[in-house]
Length: 161
Image (cartoon, rainbow, N blue to C red; front, side, top):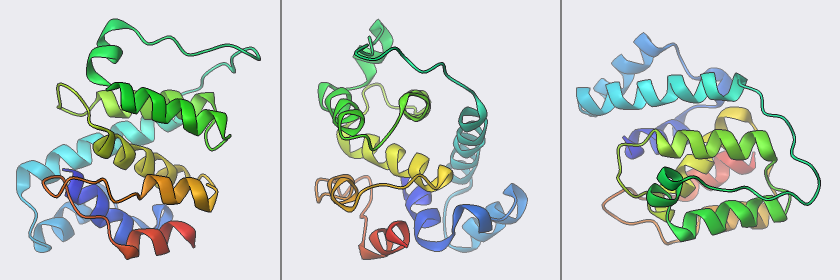
């Protein structure tokens, strides 16, 4: 499924991504498995719904407390990374909550930092959220596990444009 998300980053702008039926056919023609396509499209549907949900802005100086499931599934590195993104004003509270929700929608028992970064990229891509180049560089750091996927220069080019 993560390979499909990266394929979307590389080949489509959020506004030009075709409807699910057409996209499924294109992904199949690109060689992706039917189960992976279904999982990715379902995850993307949740992405769109989550983006429309609202979140009250927290009071100044407040901190995000993670419940037991979030702590179990989001590694310490993931939680630290989301804190880093907030501290450097790369994301706001509603986007943070959407990122956490979409990460928890992954089937993984524990989400690695590499996969978490892909979720963050998906949210930035989908919402067209502007991100500082240094933060984007951190998101695209060469820590991505080869078993997950390879993020190439095309993703950097697309996200910076």
